[in-house]
Length: 218
Length: 218
Image 1 (cartoon, each protein chain N blue to C red):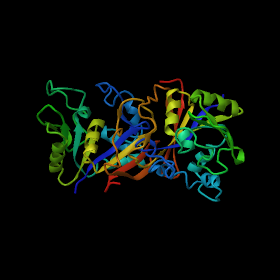
Image 2: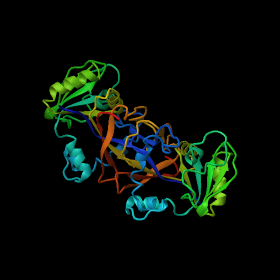
Image 3: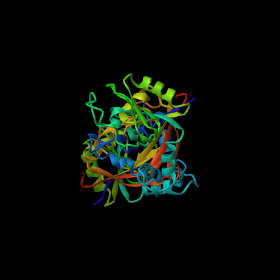
Image 4: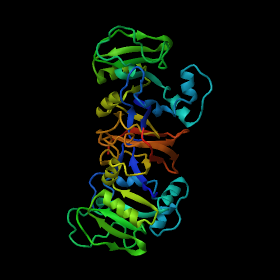
């Protein structure tokens, strides 16, 4: 059975998955890029951005595995872009330029309908107005038997966790404090939702990788 | 200037520093011992409990350093014991037997006066009813120029963090989920309080060690 997986999702020591005040200049929120200091030097990140070289090792292995066996993605709308409310036009095409790093169908949760958007390299953004269950069903249908990766952001992951629909969460705990922002797990009783920590690996740079999996519950 | 330090304080991936429902059978709260799986195998822990052997390495180094250069301790009352309200008698002498591992004066915060309690090995429990500032002043006076270690629990550390009185917090992030319990950092804007993460080390077993220090603020 294909799985719904959150992969390479970074949180701070104080639990924030994004900084406050996301906007065009701060797609990860203010201070948010500090969460990704483990990711930027990797060979995988550099390759995604058309550059050569970069570090290999544990962090890069996790980064690379985050794209393997994934047949569709789900994103919250705020992760797709900073536009709020009805789409004013079709001009916003994501943060990632003409060739986004997904190379699969990407289901974007939104309250506002919009026509699908085909990008270079096989990525197609499809806009889903029916909520998280519908998006998951559409992603499963489109994934060709492969897994579905839930990219974020925080609010979307929390919705899927609350519904206990996520099979696996790979968190990267970055050794930074954000102080404020979007807290990933506050108020979610992860044990009652059936999750446990099943694996942990020290990263190449600072961050700690922790895998949470949904089991039979406590 | 001697420092007020929290050392070897473990939290779960979801941020809890103790499990729920602390009582005589569950001094760390239900599920709380999972936070200390990095600590129990160390040579330092075994030595504290009169046993030989045990692991050396990063985890043991941190555990051992937690007792070096410390001239006094401060504990919240719940960390001293499960008794609530006025002391019914003098029979409760802490969780640690006749010779507690402190070997210094230990200032216990409580609303209820009690006579000091001398234990074997140099530990003396002194009960402070005047609040966190008074306890800190008394501990400084008693520490002979050495640092003061704030042992916990969660509520006490939160009080001292809110007052920005702690110079250093060494957290051990244990790769477990607790789901519920006492959350260490929720609602505290650690950046606004002047803290930043200055160091991180992968532990011998699973846990990640992170040092937060109070600087000039963001």
